[in-house]
Image (cartoon, rainbow, N blue to C red; front, side, top):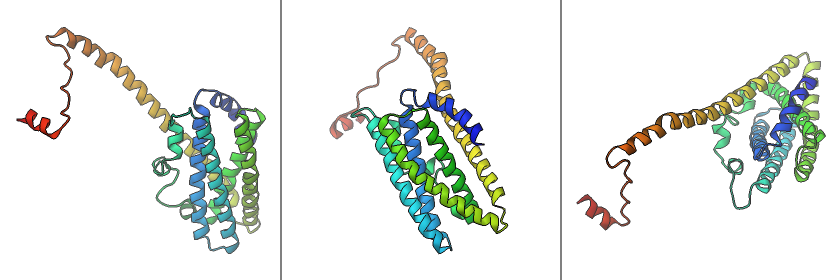
Length: 249
C-alpha cells in the first residue's frame, strides 16, 4: 500500500504545490482536518473507560490543536496582503467542519468503538506521515512550511507509535484488529472519493452555469436590445424613509 500510494502521491503533489493558490488550499484543508481530529480525540478522552488511554488521547488532542494553528498561520502568511482568501476564511469558519462532514453529529469514537477508533487513528496518522515525507522528499513547500512540516512530523510519528502499540495489543489478545485496519483503510478511500466527487460537482456546476450564460442569457440580452427601449436600468433605491413614502404615494 505504501509504494502504491507514494506512486500517485508524487505526481499529484507536484501539480498541487505548484498551481497558483493551491498551496494555501492544501494547508487550509490540513488545518481543518487537524481541528476535526482534535475534537475527535477530546471526545475519545472523555468517553474511553481506559484510564491509561485518556491521557494519550488528551495529549494527542493538544498536538492536533497546535498543528491546526500552525497550518492556519501558514495560510495567512501565504495569502496576499490585505486580501482574505477563501482558504484563509475556511480556517476561521467554525461551521465548515460540520458542513463538510469533518465533524458529524456523532463522534467518531462513539460510532466506531475503541478498537476500530484506534485502527482508524493508526491508519490516518501513518498516511499523514507518508504524505508529508513525500512533500519533503520532493522539496515542494516553501522553506517556512517545510520547517513547520518537520516540526509536525515529530508529533505525528508519536501518534503512529502509540496507536500501533495499541493495535499490537489487540492482535495479541486475538481481537480482529487486522480486519479493523482494513476497514479503516477502505473508509478513508471511500471518504476521499466522496470529497473528490463533491469538489468535482461544485466545479462542474460553475462550468455549466458559465455555458448557460453564454448560450442562453447573453444571446437573449442581445435580442432584447433590438426592442424599443431595450433593457432598462432599475430606478435608484430611495435614500430615506421620506423619499420611500413619496415614491409609494
